[in-house]
Amino acid sequence: MATKKANKKTCLACKPELAEHKISDFYMSKNPMHKDGKVPWCKECIKSNSLSESGEIDEDKLKNVLRQINKPYYKDVLQSAVNQYKKEHSFVPENEVKYYGSDIIGLYFKNINSLRQVQAKSYEDSMKEGFVRKPGVNAKKIEVIKNTLSPKEEEVKHYTDLGDFIVTDDIIDLFGDGYSTTEYKKMYEKYEKLKLNYSLQTNLHQEALATYVRFKVKEEEATANGDVDEAKKWYDAAQNAADKARLTPKQLTKADLQGGINSFSEIFKAVEQAIDIIPILPRFKFRPNDALDFNIWCYINYIRDLQGLPHCEYEDVYKFYDKKKEEYIEQYGDPYGIFDDEPTEKNRTNVKKFITLPRDYEDGDDE
Image (cartoon, rainbow, N blue to C red; front, side, top):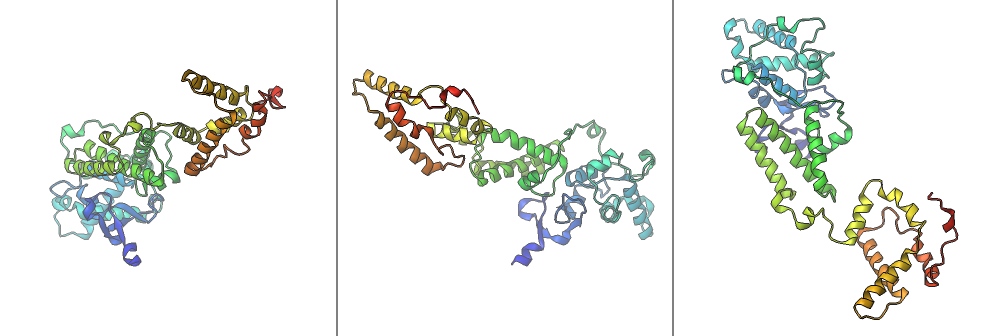
């Protein structure tokens, strides 16, 4: 069973129900981001998304596919593939060679993987080199197969500026292997934005949000490319993931809309999880500037007095406090040690004697 699974790979471009293929259905890749040594799209999807209806290679479509699977595009290597096909199929009239785009693409990938100096390069690498492998070669003079896009479709398009964005191992672990730098940047930015309003309480919550983000970015790319069928496919997948992860507005609870805090215990938990707060708090916990315990006791008795109730004893306050602390630790634990060597316990006797301050109170040192 394990062997059968190992010989399978999921295509990121196929319909979900048809996405599993044999390993041999994928082109090889030396790109270090493709850890399994294969590109993330199957051969059929690469070809079908790179060709016109007549079977010709559409240069713009091919570039878009290579950008998404993060493989380089070199015009001179593509031209070499065309020349190779002509030589190996001399019986095909020269004016009909262009209709064999599927075979030419196969030769292109074979050549890219056999050229040591470019086999590990990305689409961005080839773009920086002007889509030409040999330095000094004028790309405009190289004969390539013409694209079949209409003038309207050839309008200037705008793409995400990668800036100094770096794909880290953590990002790959979160979203999976096989995406381009551009896709990782889009997914990471969307994930960071959405997680501010989505409580990542467990690894399952994190995985659910990452799944939604993957599908959503794919939907946006398909929409930008004008591929309605693809956009609809990824939209449905994203919506399904959103429903399961409770990300849709109709599924947000009152607690979600209020920031997820409904009680003091949730405030304490939020404080513990927030960055930079816990490292700062101890100096205030262990260096009180007034007898806070005494103030709390006075406030409680003030409220009871207003309600016509008898005053409570100092011990009653801490009985209630100890009970709630025990419940809190039982539910959330104490991962940051906020209750270790707790000063409220050792100071109770002093406070009971009416604000006998700690010996080091006058030091004024916050350290």
